[in-house]
Image (cartoon, rainbow, N blue to C red):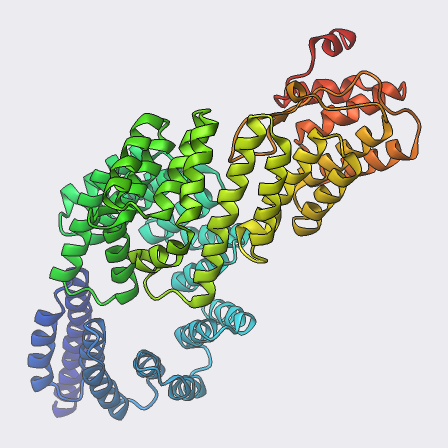
Length: 592
């Protein structure tokens, strides 16, 4: 009888303990989901007084403290849990995570090794080690560990998501998609998986699939903030900024204190050149970060600096940012008005004059643009001071400052060259473009040949075809993956072959400062026939079409060469026309 009673008590105790374990898991999940860690800690501390050697209670206290970034308390409870159960491999994972957060990476690696020594199939330990390796630049080691986590725990959804995140950072969207689809198969209701899938599809320009993934997430939880933010990012990447704004506003309606939503809203306004709305949203985001004591100094500093640059009317950047916005919206008069207001307040501001001159050039007021550029260059000693005072560039290195200074000068001289060219003064245009080349930095955007491109076009205008070829070859050397470099080399060769040819001004028309390559050019009627020039030109056009199978200008030029060589030219002319290049009507009639 006593033996039966003892067995009954043991069975009852086991049942109660099992029920408590389930209850503890429910409490933990509930407080974590509500971000109510403080009350969770109060509950588990009370339970710990009843059961001081309960491993689950100790681990729960450790995890809740870690969520609050209380590393000392986290370490205390997990070390206690290890005293209760030395075989607790997950305890080593959390201790290693604390060490990593304290920048004790050597200690973290050693702790992970201890955990793997106890259980070599504990996936989270491989996961953490992989993330640590990634932070230290060991990408191959990181990928190996992320894959190892999946190998030992093939049903671990978090591992597939983490490896997908790694693939996304490498722009390997195919592999990322494969991992996310596997995670979706394991848990069809995991919102995080759908959010990631949406981003992968959008980065791969598959926007219907991206929105389909988000819609599935929102079917599960129509008011899930992360899914709504993901949908906003899909619209943002898709450049549907109005839909993105509508989406971010809905997030703010649901959760007014979400500082990220205000920041994303500000970014969308910025893309639409709505500067006043941008200022309201970015300021609100910063205010919420301060109120919530968000510990993200880089993010906070960036937000403050860009707000000050665009929204502080005591700075010159306030005026040229608004001038740029109106220019991008196509309202040149408003743009000039903003620049004039800036010049009135900052009469020595180089950048305001420079940006104003570019607007005047776009308006066709070439003489005004030349005069304004000359004033800007008179104040070029101000460039360094202006950049260093711009909030966005506070703390910029001297080398970067020098590079930006050179880039601004290069831009001014290229723009001046355009003005003179438009006025028919090619010689002055060439003098300006040589100044641009002398100022061109060897790194950065201008290193890739903008000035040499303009010089080549000017030399074509003066019928100096072999010199133009040299200029275009310089671009090809700097930007070998740009198909139009090869087009221009072929063009120069064609002109050299036809000794009596010239490019009259009405046959060489510059259309846009931002797209020098967009020219309308009719080749002379008498072109080269079967010469070395033809072979060389065709070779360069083949390279151009290999780099860009939709290069309409290359098809146009090759069609002309084929026509003169009595070969099939219609396919190239028709293809060029299909791609939008304006083929002369006479040639289209010939091909009908």
